[in-house]
Amino acid sequence: MLFPEYRPRRMRQTKALRNMIRETRISPSDFIFPLFAVEGKNIKNPIPSMPGQFQLSVENIASMAAEAYKLGIPGIILFGIPNKKDSLGTEAYKKDGIVQKAIKAVKNRVPNITVITDVCLCEYTDHGHCGIVEKGKIDNDSTIDLLADAAVSHARAGADMVAPSDMMDGRVAEIRDRLDDNGFINIPIMAYSAKYHSAYYGPFREAANSAPKFGDRKTYQMDPANAMEAIREANMDVEEGADIIMVKPALSYLDIIYRVKTEIDLPIAAYNVSGEYSMIKAAAKLGFIDGEKVMMETLTSIKRAGADIILTYFAIEAAKKFGA
Image 1 (cartoon, helix red, strand yellow):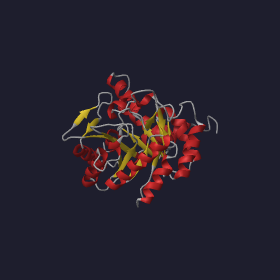
Image 2 (cartoon, one colour):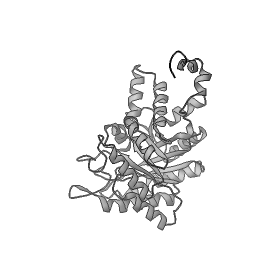
Image 3 (tube, helix red, strand yellow):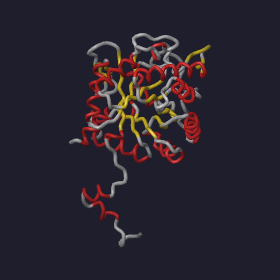
Image 4 (cartoon, one colour):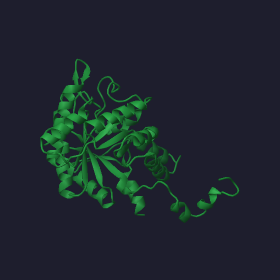
């Protein structure tokens, strides 16, 4: 097809024509809204580096979940910030831990929303690492035992799905086995399979109070330069029983989302992370960009790359655009 016989601009002349041939569509049903739960009552602490996001007490978590569900957002993912931390991340798998209480509050208020829980230790350990520290190093195998404990405790509290984000080897298999052994055969696992060691996580670490106290996470999170490794990681998680494969971050890793989508026959999630959110908010505040338009373009690009599910702090703001 060559000009002048073929004129691509013909189909761009009106909004109706453009909508008619649009290849990628997003909707609130694509989104999962991340929420940060803290102890106490009537707590709504603004997160300075993430304008519009908050640390919330459980009754406020439930209210936000209700708002999200009303807007057509099908699920939330919960992160917990406990009052006490220790070397074993004990609060992560306590029966009455902060996430466990938040799960119950949300399910009581919004029974039909999908409650997903982050399964990791970084928010709960006094050293801030995602695993147990032995002689200055992260001990993989003792960590996955505690991660499985956390996943089971979340399921007992009423979680609909668990999402291990730690990047320990073998944790998906351990969690699957433990869930099944405890009667939770229908609880899906959304695995953070290709989670990169990224500078885009900075605002999240403020929000979750989860920055490591020493060293970094390069021994368990992926090197940003690697692509084929993401396929190997994803395949491992598929073999171990994952139901959804996640790529994190999203915007700088659109190629990875596409590769994983073409290689893996499972739903693909992508996490539009805190740094991606905060950069748009900061640039919009300074008047450098149209924040709403860049938000929608960004979310569309993630879907276009192959994500079936988008975890995003923009969820409520974007969902409101569809009802405008």
